[in-house]
Image (cartoon, rainbow, N blue to C red; front, side, top):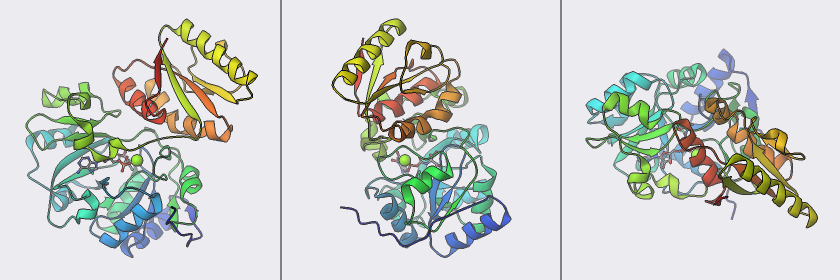
Length: 345
Ligand code: TXA
Ligand code: MG
């Protein structure tokens, strides 16, 4: 059942002084606002305002047991939201903030439990986007914000994608341009001695290890328990995705074979591939970028998933990437978008 009700004429505003002021005012009044960050657009509300946080869950259709990330614009603000900040946490902040790294720490009593879905920890990050920082500063409070998509859909990396998902349910979206990183932050639990990656991102395990000396990756712990959000359907376009991995030539042959088969049965299907193999295909090709530029691939990823819907595809075959370095964060999102549908050729 859809409990969202259309009650706003949602506006997209430029990221100038007027737009930033309007966003900060709305946040102070307990409204939720679409905010650009370097990773994906966030749906922000004051982290101390229970009612406002509740509005985020309603607008997104988000399950109530999935906690949201609190965004700060200064290190001083961390003390308002987190306690017992460990040495590793401080080192990671120093190395990667502002940037796409979220740290899970013990929460303070002033953080309402609706932010953390009842957990005694809170996830905190400092976004590397001057518009996000300006809005947080002007609002004067840390801003709780999940990605600004409808629950289950690909995260938005442009103001227009936020509009496509949330038109009528929020008053304002600040347009900060296309997101530079393109996928959500790495989430790291720093409440125990060895940091644990709960969600991979562009700050890789290697990068974290180089600062803390040791790190546990999410496939080594029960991620569903530690980071509630990862158990839900995510990033799903309407099309059915199938990821194919194996030698490149064999994967291309198989994809072509399946697309032809689909065509014969009247199913509209396409391929999501890389510069290196695009010449193997014809028809509906969604280009993810070069295999040798994973940052570029991440930047394009969610727009590519949304493109599958724009093209009206019923099926999309996706070439797999190596799950090394940044490839692991990208494959994590693709595998979820495909509901785990991955085949070895
Ligand atoms: O880059 C990002 O992280 C973006 C931008 C807007 O900052 N935000 C984002 O939020 O991706 P969201 O709500 O889509 O994902 C938050 C993730 C979820 O997997 C959630 O379970 C996890 O962070 N999380 C939040 N609080 C947590 C906590 N206290 N303990 C463990 N995981 C937590
Ligand atoms: Mg999300």
